[in-house]
Length: 392
Image 1: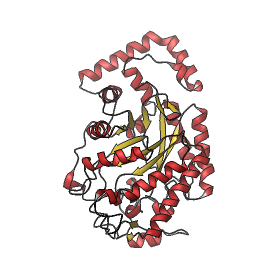
Image 2: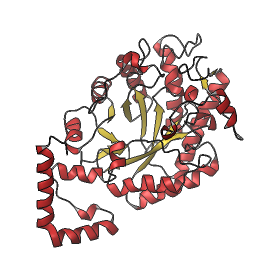
Image 3: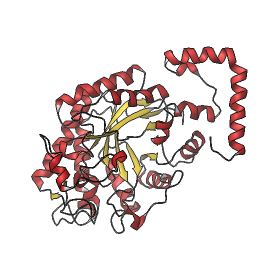
Image 4: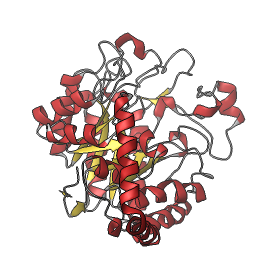
């Protein structure tokens, strides 16, 4: 976990990635002080790479009203401020680009997470409006409105939005780009047999259903500097029977690699509300098997995500060959210093020289003064947790 990884010309100092996590704290797509603190603290924590939340390429491609965006030029500078701060802490940062498609428009989790109704879409329209689109006029579930079916001109418009957002990401100084091709958003609905009922060159057999996602990936790769890595998040299985499965993902991962994707970030589910039809049991590392199979069969670097909670578990996942990177999300919300704790859990001593100097100097001084006492206290706490059956 603490060995470097070279991705093109970018060298990650370790294999720990902060996963994109929606914050719904932007102002008309512009990053706020919340993002500076939220993402900046992970640079303090020592993660190898930090990703922004899902960042919309279009105002019609947002999860909710206050999502980050890169659909216009005035959104670049606020994100550049965040990027510059992370770089000043010797951190690396990527942006996840997304279009939510037929799942555009919903309330934050803390407000219930429900999709906007037709009345809500009108009520929150604003200057740029809301528009749900998809490969076919098939809704994401009973509580979602039916999307508009994209024609070829509409598909070209979205492809250009991804390209332009990629150029803005470069202007903001990001080190990596990730394409969000998972969780039932616009691009993965083209992959699904259920969501995509087209009869043209973009529907039917898997070769056709992959055509548009691969076109987007190719165009983003061409717009993104050759020396910087491109990630792509996919749903290994999309949660619906007879829709998209692991064998499909292996085929797709091979094609993503062929068009220049460097890392496949392996998630699952999200096609519709009715994922219980093929529910993936949620437990510790519940998606590691998907990442391992895709890594082995497609011969591509993978990133594992989902209920990775501590250092020993993450280290085991990497050493076993399940993935090349591990992504953590909610565990990092609970403890932004998760990478440094993981190192201690694996037996590395606390190296305060690698911490931000304004923190590390004080902690090193404390360690020098109270070293034996602090170590005894930590050992006692660890023994107590083990006796109670609690993971570190």
